[in-house]
Image (cartoon, rainbow, N blue to C red; front, side):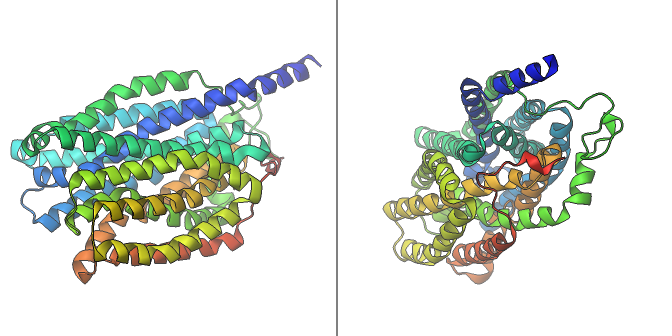
Length: 448
């Protein structure tokens, strides 16, 4: 009886209103800081390219810089697998703290990286190493933080809680773009090339202890296994035999494939609309760098504000319905939006296009982030989501900017980004018909 009372008391504490608010706040702040660190690189590509790849042409510099941005995504599935497995064995909170410090290390390496003129090839090599570390950290962050949000949420509010994952990513993008835009407006071109581009990464280093302190006080949702019991459903044995990564690939291969196909549409949209558009509008359409950066600020602000409302909508009408119709609207809107922008490029048109696509991006992405952890049982939930998210974003998302830059160069068609987005979003939507919508249903009943 005393054990039951203690367990009930712990469960009540875990799911109290005040703890849930702390989890949302702690996850949102920490995740926003990490995505500021991870994404600010892309807003500086036009400055970093000539400094680290001076021998290449203008096109070659952009291609090499987008590839350097993309290598960070190659490590995301590795980070997702290893840190996700760590989170399923030792706790979500510990994994989230680890990812913060790793992201800070990546920022420190970038901030200190010598340019090609200073140390030759050592500069680009160090930059690539830093992006690999940041990619490893980001791969583990999304799965652990989303799982923590979902496991704290009531069954009928999981969409709202997990929507803060996308909202916090948008907040990080907004802060990154705003920081670079303000620096670009305040400093001369020579100052930005000499030292100004390093400032955002120094800021990223300084924010890490803040995020770590906040996360240290969050309540853990992973219950430790009982002595002598394996968390593998229906079996017993030493707890140390729990191998989440092996279980995900051995028992949930079909879910992994479905999850990857589901996630790539939103990830490609996020990378092209959110991160590539500043370089595209500046290099291809000739718009001022500051106006294109403020367009990304608008995108981040819209995502941050809309995310919780989209989460509530998905809780009310179902994840699949919101995803399907928002993606259908995205496919229909892409070509007219790009044609209208390219026909007469202007800051006003860019802002309008970004704002519309940002709304559609929020509508499709917030429910997807909720569905991913709902696919897997608790013992492997973080690992499963991290594997899906990491593999889905590593090639299709991380190298989307590289592919589009290459397509623009080969075809000479400024509509190439729109066509690339339309194809990937359409393919990613088809898999919805083979995924169960668990809106409002208990998810931990999957385990025995």
